[in-house]
Image 1 (cartoon, rainbow, N blue to C red):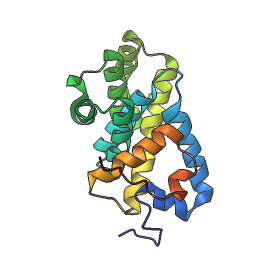
Image 2 (cartoon, one colour):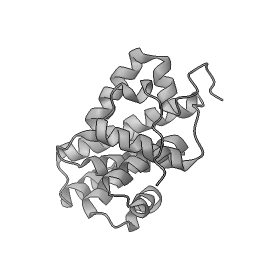
Image 3 (cartoon, helix red, strand yellow):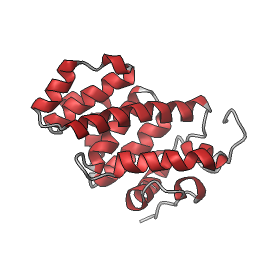
Length: 190
C-alpha cells in the first residue's frame, strides 16, 4: 500500500506520476532521452543498464519493468536479460557493454566509486564519451527512479505476466504521458 493516496490502478511509478503530472512530464522527458536515443548506445543496451542498476537497488518494479522492455528489444531473449541483471560479467554481451555496466554498478554505489580505470576500460572496448556520459546518467537517474518508487511504496504487481504488455507499449510509443494516464494494456491470450 503506497505511503500516500495515489491511483492504485496504475502500478509502480505510473501511479506516482499520475499523482503529480507537473513532475511526471520532466521525468518522462528524461527517460525518453536516456532510454530511447539511438545515438551511440542502442535502446536495448540502455534498458539493460537501467535493469541492472534497478536490480542492484532491489527495486522489483523497475528491474522487472525495464527488464521486460529490454526483452522486447531483444526479441524475447529473457535469459540474456536475466544474465545481465544478475551477472553481467558472464553474460553474452559485448565487452563494451560489460565495461559500461561496471561503470553503472559503481555509480549505483556512489558517484565517487567510478574510477579512471573503469573509464579507460570502457574506452579500450570502444565506448565513446557520449556512451560513458549516458551510462552514468542512466545509472544516476535510475537510483532516483528506484528510490521514488520504493520510497513511496508504490503499488508493485507481483504477477510478472503484467509487465510484457506495458513493455510493448513503452517500446513502441515511448515514455510519453500515456505512461501515467493510460490503463494497463492487457496481454492477449493466444
